[in-house]
Image (cartoon, rainbow over all chains, first blue to last red; front, top):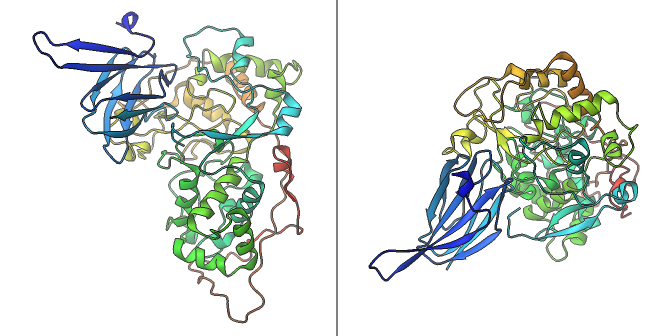
Amino acid sequence: MKSKILASAVATLFVVAGATPVSAEVVITQKAKKFDKKKISIKKGESVKFVNADSIAHNIHSRSSNGKFDLGVSKPGTSTSKVFDKAGKFKVRCAIHPKMKITVKVN
Amino acid sequence: MGTHKKFSKLAVSMVVAISGFATVASTVATSAEKKSRADWKKEYVRPSEIPFPKENPYTAAKADLGRTLFFDPRLSGANYISCGTCHNPSFAWGDGLAKGIGHAMTKLGRRTPTILNLAFGEDLMWDGRFETLEQQALGPMSAPVEMNQNMKAIVAELQQIPEYRTLFNISFPGKGITVDNIAKAIATFERTVVSGVAPFDRWVAGDEHAVSESAKRGFDLFNNKANCVACHSGWNFTDSSFHDIGMPDKDIGRGKVVPGVVVMQHAFKVPTLRNAVERAPYMHDGSLKNLYSVVEHYDNGFVTRPSKSEEIFALKLNAAEKTDLVEFMKTLSSKDAPMALPRLPAYDQTVAGSLNVSPAAGPSTGSTAMRTPKGACNSFLMHYIPCSK
Protein backbone atom coordinates (compact mmCIF):
# COMPACT_ATOMS: atom_id res chain seq x y z
CA MET A 1 0.00 0.00 0.00
CA LYS A 2 2.65 2.46 1.08
CA SER A 3 4.79 1.68 -1.90
CA LYS A 4 1.97 2.70 -4.14
CA ILE A 5 1.60 6.10 -2.59
CA LEU A 6 2.67 8.90 -4.85
CA ALA A 7 5.17 11.32 -3.39
CA SER A 8 3.78 14.38 -5.07
CA ALA A 9 0.39 15.77 -5.86
CA VAL A 10 -1.12 14.62 -9.08
CA ALA A 11 -4.43 15.27 -10.67
CA THR A 12 -6.13 12.01 -11.38
CA LEU A 13 -9.04 11.84 -13.74
CA PHE A 14 -11.69 9.25 -13.27
CA VAL A 15 -13.81 8.80 -16.33
CA VAL A 16 -17.02 7.04 -15.66
CA ALA A 17 -17.69 4.58 -18.42
CA GLY A 18 -20.42 5.75 -20.69
CA ALA A 19 -20.78 9.10 -18.99
CA THR A 20 -19.58 12.39 -20.35
CA PRO A 21 -18.89 14.30 -17.09
CA VAL A 22 -15.36 13.93 -15.82
CA SER A 23 -14.74 14.32 -12.12
CA ALA A 24 -11.28 15.23 -10.95
CA GLU A 25 -9.61 14.22 -7.73
CA VAL A 26 -6.49 15.97 -6.61
CA VAL A 27 -4.15 13.87 -4.52
CA ILE A 28 -2.29 15.58 -1.69
CA THR A 29 0.38 13.69 0.21
CA GLN A 30 1.26 14.14 3.87
CA LYS A 31 4.93 13.38 4.36
CA ALA A 32 7.49 14.46 6.97
CA LYS A 33 4.77 16.45 8.75
CA LYS A 34 4.07 18.51 5.65
CA PHE A 35 1.52 18.65 2.88
CA ASP A 36 3.29 18.39 -0.43
CA LYS A 37 1.48 21.53 -1.67
CA LYS A 38 0.83 24.81 0.12
CA LYS A 39 -2.17 25.73 -2.00
CA ILE A 40 -4.30 24.18 -4.68
CA SER A 41 -7.23 25.32 -6.79
CA ILE A 42 -10.12 23.04 -7.66
CA LYS A 43 -13.60 23.39 -9.04
CA LYS A 44 -16.72 23.21 -6.95
CA GLY A 45 -17.80 19.62 -6.50
CA GLU A 46 -14.33 18.19 -6.97
CA SER A 47 -12.62 16.05 -4.42
CA VAL A 48 -9.24 16.12 -2.72
CA LYS A 49 -7.67 12.86 -1.61
CA PHE A 50 -5.32 13.23 1.34
CA VAL A 51 -2.79 10.42 1.50
CA ASN A 52 -0.88 9.85 4.74
CA ALA A 53 2.56 8.72 3.58
CA ASP A 54 4.06 9.36 7.01
CA SER A 55 4.77 6.85 9.74
CA ILE A 56 2.60 8.79 12.18
CA ALA A 57 -1.07 9.71 12.43
CA HIS A 58 -2.40 12.94 10.96
CA ASN A 59 -5.70 14.78 10.75
CA ILE A 60 -7.49 16.87 8.16
CA HIS A 61 -9.77 19.65 9.30
CA SER A 62 -10.81 23.18 8.51
CA ARG A 63 -12.31 25.89 10.68
CA SER A 64 -12.96 28.15 7.71
CA SER A 65 -16.08 30.25 8.06
CA ASN A 66 -17.44 29.02 4.74
CA GLY A 67 -17.41 25.41 5.75
CA LYS A 68 -16.00 23.58 8.78
CA PHE A 69 -15.13 19.92 8.60
CA ASP A 70 -13.02 17.36 10.41
CA LEU A 71 -12.06 14.07 8.82
CA GLY A 72 -10.80 12.53 12.07
CA VAL A 73 -7.60 10.55 12.40
CA SER A 74 -5.69 9.53 9.28
CA LYS A 75 -3.52 6.56 10.15
CA PRO A 76 -0.22 5.93 8.37
CA GLY A 77 -0.68 4.40 4.94
CA THR A 78 -4.32 5.37 4.64
CA SER A 79 -6.10 8.03 2.63
CA THR A 80 -9.16 10.19 3.15
CA SER A 81 -11.15 12.09 0.55
CA LYS A 82 -13.13 15.28 0.89
CA VAL A 83 -15.55 16.68 -1.65
CA PHE A 84 -15.57 20.47 -1.69
CA ASP A 85 -19.08 21.44 -2.74
CA LYS A 86 -18.91 25.09 -1.78
CA ALA A 87 -16.89 27.80 -3.48
CA GLY A 88 -14.42 29.72 -1.40
CA LYS A 89 -11.07 29.46 0.28
CA PHE A 90 -10.51 26.76 2.86
CA LYS A 91 -7.58 26.69 5.25
CA VAL A 92 -6.99 22.99 5.81
CA ARG A 93 -4.77 21.89 8.66
CA CYS A 94 -3.72 18.95 10.77
CA ALA A 95 -5.04 19.30 14.32
CA ILE A 96 -2.18 17.17 15.62
CA HIS A 97 0.59 19.01 13.76
CA PRO A 98 -0.67 22.58 13.19
CA LYS A 99 2.36 23.55 11.14
CA MET A 100 0.84 21.38 8.41
CA LYS A 101 -1.30 23.73 6.34
CA ILE A 102 -2.74 23.83 2.88
CA THR A 103 -5.15 26.30 1.31
CA VAL A 104 -7.79 24.83 -0.94
CA LYS A 105 -9.34 27.39 -3.26
CA VAL A 106 -12.63 26.16 -4.63
CA ASN A 107 -13.74 28.01 -7.76
CA MET B 1 -0.49 32.45 11.59
CA GLY B 2 -2.13 31.08 8.50
CA THR B 3 -0.43 29.34 5.64
CA HIS B 4 -1.39 32.12 3.29
CA LYS B 5 0.45 34.67 5.33
CA LYS B 6 3.90 35.64 4.37
CA PHE B 7 6.28 36.66 7.06
CA SER B 8 8.43 39.64 7.12
CA LYS B 9 11.78 38.77 8.56
CA LEU B 10 13.71 40.54 11.24
CA ALA B 11 17.42 40.05 11.25
CA VAL B 12 18.70 38.90 14.60
CA SER B 13 22.04 40.54 14.36
CA MET B 14 23.41 39.37 17.68
CA VAL B 15 22.62 35.75 17.02
CA VAL B 16 24.13 35.93 13.58
CA ALA B 17 27.22 37.61 14.97
CA ILE B 18 27.71 34.92 17.55
CA SER B 19 26.85 31.91 15.54
CA GLY B 20 26.82 32.69 11.88
CA PHE B 21 24.16 30.08 11.66
CA ALA B 22 22.06 29.55 8.62
CA THR B 23 18.33 29.25 8.64
CA VAL B 24 17.32 26.05 10.31
CA ALA B 25 16.59 23.15 8.08
CA SER B 26 12.93 22.46 8.09
CA THR B 27 13.26 18.82 7.33
CA VAL B 28 11.72 16.72 10.03
CA ALA B 29 13.27 13.40 10.57
CA THR B 30 11.41 10.45 11.86
CA SER B 31 12.70 8.25 14.59
CA ALA B 32 12.97 5.42 12.11
CA GLU B 33 15.79 7.10 10.28
CA LYS B 34 19.26 6.15 11.36
CA LYS B 35 21.50 9.12 11.09
CA SER B 36 24.89 9.96 12.43
CA ARG B 37 25.33 12.34 15.34
CA ALA B 38 26.77 14.91 12.95
CA ASP B 39 23.72 14.70 10.73
CA TRP B 40 21.39 15.00 13.70
CA LYS B 41 23.19 18.13 14.82
CA LYS B 42 22.31 19.76 11.51
CA GLU B 43 18.64 19.48 12.46
CA TYR B 44 19.12 21.78 15.43
CA VAL B 45 20.88 24.81 13.94
CA ARG B 46 19.49 28.06 15.27
CA PRO B 47 17.56 30.28 12.83
CA SER B 48 19.02 33.62 11.93
CA GLU B 49 15.74 35.53 11.90
CA ILE B 50 12.65 35.96 13.99
CA PRO B 51 9.51 35.62 11.83
CA PHE B 52 6.89 38.35 12.11
CA PRO B 53 3.54 38.16 10.29
CA LYS B 54 2.88 40.69 7.57
CA GLU B 55 -0.32 41.68 9.37
CA ASN B 56 1.74 42.81 12.35
CA PRO B 57 5.29 43.57 11.23
CA TYR B 58 8.07 44.38 13.66
CA THR B 59 8.89 47.91 14.68
CA ALA B 60 11.12 48.81 17.60
CA ALA B 61 8.54 51.25 18.94
CA LYS B 62 5.83 48.61 18.91
CA ALA B 63 8.04 46.05 20.63
CA ASP B 64 8.96 48.57 23.32
CA LEU B 65 5.32 49.48 23.84
CA GLY B 66 4.46 45.79 24.04
CA ARG B 67 7.14 45.27 26.65
CA THR B 68 5.74 48.09 28.74
CA LEU B 69 2.20 46.71 28.45
CA PHE B 70 3.42 43.20 29.21
CA PHE B 71 4.73 44.29 32.60
CA ASP B 72 1.94 46.74 33.42
CA PRO B 73 -0.47 45.31 36.04
CA ARG B 74 -3.05 47.89 35.02
CA LEU B 75 -3.90 45.58 32.14
CA SER B 76 -5.74 43.39 34.63
CA GLY B 77 -9.19 44.19 35.93
CA ALA B 78 -7.96 44.67 39.49
CA ASN B 79 -4.73 46.35 38.40
CA TYR B 80 -2.39 43.96 40.22
CA ILE B 81 -1.66 41.21 37.67
CA SER B 82 0.50 41.82 34.63
CA CYS B 83 1.32 39.33 31.88
CA GLY B 84 4.76 39.22 33.52
CA THR B 85 3.29 38.15 36.85
CA CYS B 86 2.83 34.64 35.48
CA HIS B 87 5.30 34.86 32.59
CA ASN B 88 8.17 35.89 34.79
CA PRO B 89 11.48 36.33 32.95
CA SER B 90 13.29 35.24 36.10
CA PHE B 91 11.63 31.83 35.76
CA ALA B 92 12.40 31.53 32.04
CA TRP B 93 9.06 33.26 31.40
CA GLY B 94 7.02 30.89 33.54
CA ASP B 95 6.02 31.20 37.19
CA GLY B 96 7.65 28.23 38.89
CA LEU B 97 4.29 27.00 40.13
CA ALA B 98 2.61 23.68 39.44
CA LYS B 99 -0.51 25.53 38.36
CA GLY B 100 -1.02 29.19 37.63
CA ILE B 101 -2.68 31.67 39.96
CA GLY B 102 -5.13 34.15 38.50
CA HIS B 103 -7.52 36.87 39.55
CA ALA B 104 -8.44 36.85 43.25
CA MET B 105 -5.89 34.09 43.83
CA THR B 106 -7.88 31.66 41.70
CA LYS B 107 -5.91 28.47 41.18
CA LEU B 108 -5.89 27.75 37.47
CA GLY B 109 -6.21 24.34 35.90
CA ARG B 110 -2.85 24.14 34.16
CA ARG B 111 0.76 25.14 34.57
CA THR B 112 1.78 28.48 33.13
CA PRO B 113 3.58 27.86 29.82
CA THR B 114 6.65 29.85 28.92
CA ILE B 115 6.44 32.54 26.25
CA LEU B 116 9.97 31.78 25.04
CA ASN B 117 10.28 31.36 21.29
CA LEU B 118 6.58 31.71 20.55
CA ALA B 119 7.41 33.58 17.35
CA PHE B 120 8.26 30.17 15.95
CA GLY B 121 5.15 28.41 17.26
CA GLU B 122 1.69 27.60 16.02
CA ASP B 123 -1.64 27.48 17.83
CA LEU B 124 -1.00 28.86 21.28
CA MET B 125 -1.95 27.65 24.76
CA TRP B 126 -1.72 24.10 26.05
CA ASP B 127 -4.78 23.20 23.99
CA GLY B 128 -4.00 25.34 20.94
CA ARG B 129 -7.22 27.30 21.07
CA PHE B 130 -5.63 30.50 19.76
CA GLU B 131 -4.14 30.53 16.28
CA THR B 132 -2.09 33.70 16.68
CA LEU B 133 -0.13 35.47 19.37
CA GLU B 134 -2.40 38.47 18.89
CA GLN B 135 -5.43 36.37 19.82
CA GLN B 136 -3.54 34.74 22.65
CA ALA B 137 -2.52 38.06 24.17
CA LEU B 138 -6.14 39.02 24.69
CA GLY B 139 -7.29 35.61 25.95
CA PRO B 140 -5.81 35.59 29.45
CA MET B 141 -6.32 39.33 29.78
CA SER B 142 -10.08 39.02 29.40
CA ALA B 143 -10.51 35.63 31.11
CA PRO B 144 -12.38 36.14 34.42
CA VAL B 145 -10.16 33.66 36.27
CA GLU B 146 -6.93 35.10 34.91
CA MET B 147 -6.57 38.87 34.49
CA ASN B 148 -10.31 39.58 34.56
CA GLN B 149 -10.10 42.66 32.38
CA ASN B 150 -13.06 44.28 30.71
CA MET B 151 -11.66 44.95 27.25
CA LYS B 152 -13.76 48.08 26.74
CA ALA B 153 -12.63 49.43 30.08
CA ILE B 154 -8.94 48.86 29.39
CA VAL B 155 -9.00 51.17 26.38
CA ALA B 156 -10.62 53.92 28.45
CA GLU B 157 -8.18 53.31 31.29
CA LEU B 158 -5.10 53.53 29.10
CA GLN B 159 -6.49 56.65 27.45
CA GLN B 160 -6.15 58.35 30.82
CA ILE B 161 -2.40 57.80 30.84
CA PRO B 162 -0.80 60.48 28.67
CA GLU B 163 2.37 58.56 27.87
CA TYR B 164 0.37 55.60 26.62
CA ARG B 165 -1.54 57.88 24.27
CA THR B 166 1.78 59.06 22.92
CA LEU B 167 3.32 55.60 22.66
CA PHE B 168 0.29 54.15 20.86
CA ASN B 169 0.19 57.06 18.44
CA ILE B 170 3.85 56.48 17.61
CA SER B 171 3.35 52.76 17.06
CA PHE B 172 -0.05 53.00 15.39
CA PRO B 173 -0.25 56.41 13.69
CA GLY B 174 -3.79 57.64 13.36
CA LYS B 175 -5.24 54.68 15.24
CA GLY B 176 -4.02 55.05 18.80
CA ILE B 177 -5.23 52.91 21.69
CA THR B 178 -7.50 50.06 20.63
CA VAL B 179 -7.90 46.50 21.82
CA ASP B 180 -6.38 45.22 18.59
CA ASN B 181 -3.39 47.49 18.96
CA ILE B 182 -2.83 46.38 22.56
CA ALA B 183 -2.74 42.82 21.25
CA LYS B 184 -0.43 43.69 18.37
CA ALA B 185 2.04 45.47 20.62
CA ILE B 186 2.17 42.67 23.18
CA ALA B 187 2.47 40.03 20.45
CA THR B 188 5.32 41.95 18.83
CA PHE B 189 7.17 42.11 22.13
CA GLU B 190 6.53 38.42 22.78
CA ARG B 191 7.98 37.50 19.41
CA THR B 192 11.23 39.14 20.45
CA VAL B 193 11.51 36.89 23.49
CA VAL B 194 13.88 34.28 22.15
CA SER B 195 16.17 32.05 24.15
CA GLY B 196 19.83 32.86 23.79
CA VAL B 197 22.77 30.79 22.69
CA ALA B 198 23.14 27.76 24.95
CA PRO B 199 26.05 25.35 25.39
CA PHE B 200 24.20 23.01 23.05
CA ASP B 201 24.25 25.66 20.32
CA ARG B 202 27.98 26.12 20.75
CA TRP B 203 28.41 22.36 20.43
CA VAL B 204 26.29 22.30 17.28
CA ALA B 205 28.44 25.14 15.94
CA GLY B 206 31.56 23.07 16.42
CA ASP B 207 32.82 23.57 19.98
CA GLU B 208 33.31 19.97 21.13
CA HIS B 209 34.06 21.14 24.67
CA ALA B 210 30.80 23.04 25.09
CA VAL B 211 28.93 20.04 26.51
CA SER B 212 29.90 16.94 28.48
CA GLU B 213 30.30 13.45 27.09
CA SER B 214 27.24 12.44 29.09
CA ALA B 215 25.23 15.18 27.38
CA LYS B 216 26.44 14.00 23.97
CA ARG B 217 25.27 10.49 24.76
CA GLY B 218 22.01 12.02 25.91
CA PHE B 219 21.68 13.76 22.53
CA ASP B 220 22.09 10.40 20.81
CA LEU B 221 19.41 8.88 23.02
CA PHE B 222 17.14 11.86 22.45
CA ASN B 223 17.22 11.24 18.71
CA ASN B 224 17.14 7.47 18.74
CA LYS B 225 16.21 5.10 21.54
CA ALA B 226 14.28 7.63 23.63
CA ASN B 227 12.43 8.97 20.54
CA CYS B 228 12.09 12.47 22.04
CA VAL B 229 12.78 13.89 18.59
CA ALA B 230 9.45 12.56 17.38
CA CYS B 231 7.92 15.75 18.80
CA HIS B 232 10.70 17.83 20.38
CA SER B 233 12.35 18.39 17.02
CA GLY B 234 14.24 21.31 15.50
CA TRP B 235 16.22 24.13 17.09
CA ASN B 236 13.28 25.05 19.37
CA PHE B 237 12.85 21.44 20.48
CA THR B 238 9.18 21.34 19.59
CA ASP B 239 7.25 20.78 16.39
CA SER B 240 4.28 22.64 17.93
CA SER B 241 2.21 19.47 17.85
CA PHE B 242 -0.30 18.10 20.34
CA HIS B 243 -0.20 14.67 21.95
CA ASP B 244 -1.65 12.64 24.74
CA ILE B 245 1.50 11.60 26.55
CA GLY B 246 -0.39 9.62 29.16
CA MET B 247 -0.53 12.03 32.07
CA PRO B 248 -2.96 10.45 34.53
CA ASP B 249 -5.27 13.44 35.06
CA LYS B 250 -8.79 14.03 33.76
CA ASP B 251 -8.06 17.17 31.75
CA ILE B 252 -8.91 16.40 28.11
CA GLY B 253 -6.90 19.40 26.85
CA ARG B 254 -7.15 19.80 23.10
CA GLY B 255 -10.08 17.41 23.12
CA LYS B 256 -12.30 20.39 23.87
CA VAL B 257 -10.96 22.27 20.85
CA VAL B 258 -10.97 19.33 18.45
CA PRO B 259 -13.63 17.00 19.84
CA GLY B 260 -13.83 14.77 16.77
CA VAL B 261 -10.28 13.48 16.84
CA VAL B 262 -9.64 10.58 19.21
CA VAL B 263 -5.92 11.22 19.60
CA MET B 264 -6.58 14.83 20.61
CA GLN B 265 -8.34 13.78 23.79
CA HIS B 266 -5.98 14.44 26.72
CA ALA B 267 -3.58 15.99 24.20
CA PHE B 268 -1.48 19.05 25.03
CA LYS B 269 0.99 21.28 23.25
CA VAL B 270 4.54 19.96 22.98
CA PRO B 271 6.53 22.65 24.82
CA THR B 272 9.96 23.92 23.91
CA LEU B 273 12.78 22.36 25.89
CA ARG B 274 14.85 25.53 25.61
CA ASN B 275 15.73 26.70 29.15
CA ALA B 276 13.46 23.98 30.52
CA VAL B 277 15.81 23.33 33.41
CA GLU B 278 14.74 26.73 34.77
CA ARG B 279 11.02 26.02 34.54
CA ALA B 280 10.23 23.19 36.96
CA PRO B 281 7.77 21.72 37.71
CA TYR B 282 6.79 20.13 34.42
CA MET B 283 3.92 19.01 32.22
CA HIS B 284 0.59 20.76 31.70
CA ASP B 285 -0.45 19.92 35.24
CA GLY B 286 2.87 20.70 36.90
CA SER B 287 2.89 17.29 38.51
CA LEU B 288 6.49 16.30 37.72
CA LYS B 289 8.99 18.04 39.92
CA ASN B 290 12.19 17.78 37.88
CA LEU B 291 13.67 16.54 34.62
CA TYR B 292 14.46 13.14 36.12
CA SER B 293 10.78 12.61 36.89
CA VAL B 294 9.98 13.67 33.33
CA VAL B 295 12.33 11.02 31.96
CA GLU B 296 10.80 8.45 34.31
CA HIS B 297 7.35 9.34 32.98
CA TYR B 298 8.37 8.74 29.39
CA ASP B 299 10.32 5.64 30.32
CA ASN B 300 7.29 3.83 31.63
CA GLY B 301 5.18 6.13 33.78
CA PHE B 302 2.38 6.97 31.40
CA VAL B 303 -1.17 5.68 31.39
CA THR B 304 -2.50 3.86 28.34
CA ARG B 305 -5.84 4.80 26.78
CA PRO B 306 -7.28 5.07 23.26
CA SER B 307 -6.03 8.63 22.82
CA LYS B 308 -2.43 7.95 23.86
CA SER B 309 0.03 8.92 21.16
CA GLU B 310 1.58 5.99 19.36
CA GLU B 311 4.87 7.81 19.71
CA ILE B 312 4.77 7.17 23.45
CA PHE B 313 6.00 3.70 24.38
CA ALA B 314 8.05 2.10 27.12
CA LEU B 315 11.65 3.16 26.55
CA LYS B 316 13.39 0.73 28.90
CA LEU B 317 16.20 3.13 29.68
CA ASN B 318 18.81 2.22 32.26
CA ALA B 319 19.91 4.58 35.02
CA ALA B 320 22.94 5.86 33.12
CA GLU B 321 20.83 6.61 30.05
CA LYS B 322 18.33 8.57 32.12
CA THR B 323 21.16 10.63 33.56
CA ASP B 324 22.55 11.24 30.09
CA LEU B 325 19.19 12.51 28.86
CA VAL B 326 18.90 14.94 31.76
CA GLU B 327 22.47 16.11 31.24
CA PHE B 328 21.64 16.75 27.62
CA MET B 329 18.55 18.79 28.45
CA LYS B 330 20.60 20.92 30.83
CA THR B 331 22.74 22.01 27.89
CA LEU B 332 19.71 23.73 26.34
CA SER B 333 19.73 26.42 28.99
CA SER B 334 21.07 29.73 27.66
CA LYS B 335 21.18 31.40 31.07
CA ASP B 336 20.18 34.70 29.53
CA ALA B 337 21.24 37.88 31.25
CA PRO B 338 18.66 39.41 33.59
CA MET B 339 16.44 41.83 31.74
CA ALA B 340 15.69 45.37 32.78
CA LEU B 341 12.03 45.94 33.40
CA PRO B 342 10.30 48.94 31.90
CA ARG B 343 9.39 52.13 33.69
CA LEU B 344 5.61 52.18 33.61
CA PRO B 345 3.87 55.32 32.35
CA ALA B 346 2.44 57.48 35.11
CA TYR B 347 -1.17 58.50 35.45
CA ASP B 348 -2.16 61.98 34.37
CA GLN B 349 -1.12 64.46 37.06
CA THR B 350 -2.54 67.52 35.39
CA VAL B 351 -6.27 67.19 35.96
CA ALA B 352 -7.51 66.50 39.45
CA GLY B 353 -9.96 63.64 39.68
CA SER B 354 -9.49 62.55 36.07
CA LEU B 355 -8.44 59.08 37.02
CA ASN B 356 -11.07 56.41 37.03
CA VAL B 357 -9.24 53.32 38.19
CA SER B 358 -11.05 50.00 38.24
CA PRO B 359 -11.94 48.95 41.79
CA ALA B 360 -9.74 46.17 43.10
CA ALA B 361 -11.91 43.06 43.27
CA GLY B 362 -9.29 40.73 44.66
CA PRO B 363 -7.06 40.69 47.70
CA SER B 364 -4.50 43.41 47.92
CA THR B 365 -0.99 42.27 47.18
CA GLY B 366 0.54 45.66 47.67
CA SER B 367 2.48 47.33 44.93
CA THR B 368 3.40 44.81 42.26
CA ALA B 369 4.55 47.33 39.72
CA MET B 370 8.20 46.67 39.05
CA ARG B 371 10.13 49.76 38.19
CA THR B 372 13.48 50.37 36.67
CA PRO B 373 15.39 53.54 35.93
CA LYS B 374 13.72 55.73 33.33
CA GLY B 375 14.83 54.99 29.80
CA ALA B 376 16.51 51.74 30.70
CA CYS B 377 17.00 49.65 27.64
CA ASN B 378 16.14 46.00 27.90
CA SER B 379 19.42 44.17 28.20
CA PHE B 380 17.74 40.89 27.31
CA LEU B 381 16.37 42.15 24.03
CA MET B 382 19.68 43.70 23.16
CA HIS B 383 20.84 40.18 22.49
CA TYR B 384 18.46 40.07 19.56
CA ILE B 385 17.33 43.49 18.53
CA PRO B 386 19.22 46.78 18.64
CA CYS B 387 17.78 48.91 21.40
CA SER B 388 15.54 51.60 20.03
CA LYS B 389 16.15 54.12 22.77
